[in-house]
Length: 241
Image (cartoon, rainbow, N blue to C red; front, side, top):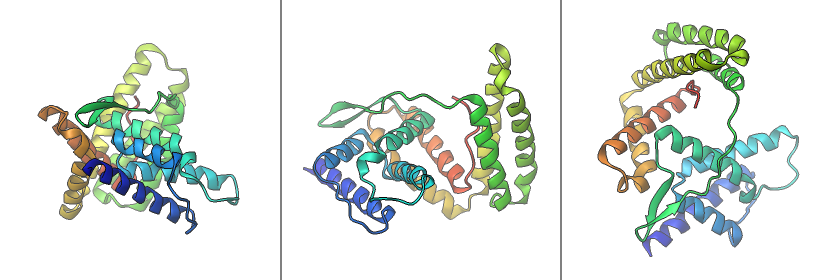
């Protein structure tokens, strides 16, 4: 009974958010749409991840020109599942989530092709330049951001032709640069922001906690906090998986 109530509340939250994105037009999450969103809840898709997936669809929709009709939640499914898969892999979460009556629920997100390394670098440079312009990280981070930007520009110039060990070395370097960037973001958080990130991380992982060993949960929680700090300052993910 409690689980069904949680599902219903989740669907109401999605419906409310979809209504806001549709400029107040009410598009009900009922029937097949309710079943679709219920699966997201059962699979552990955090609400904020679902919201970002909806945002991603709307951003693409707006780029096509003036909207013609209100968007149904079904149209957002691929983007929501993409974001959920990215979120799950970033946190090192398993590909199945025990939730219903003790029985594991398989994640329904199908494997999706990733972006190329050159495209990843181009996107990272663009977002890092934007983050640098806001000054949100503070002047003490400017040196690191400038250095990372220069390295990314150099890598972008050669990434298309890299193979074998050279490509592997670049991927490892991106991981190291990403760790530096996240450390700067964590240090720039105010105490209240850090506490808010910790609370949100606990909420996101609530459905996975009982099924994970303590050490794995600790790693996932730290990764979730790092991700939220990254989002706070609109920083790109430099690591390439």
